Length: 145
Image: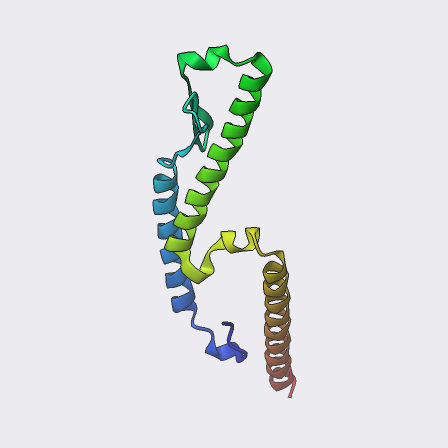
């Protein structure tokens, strides 16, 4: 939380927290590159793997060729969506584990929470700027006086 008093800001702590956050982000980037979302249809004819770069693997059982081209196409499209959603769930879980309450993805599913956070941040910013301007005004008055 932002301190209201201008002199109460602990820049060392802020920089230390920023460094820790950057280290966690670098670790996360490496771990996320290894994640793979998976999906399979109920009869095991089509299997899909989806990674950050897109479709990683498409496995068609020989019996899948008995399906019509339309049926096979729909299964593949549906399973790619499911595998991408599985990957997204894994990413969200990893982000939540890494960042906890500071998880930037928490706003992806909570638009109202995101707007509330924006309003709180704006109010804190306005208070800080107001406090800073007040301190600068005091300094100016002392210099003029």
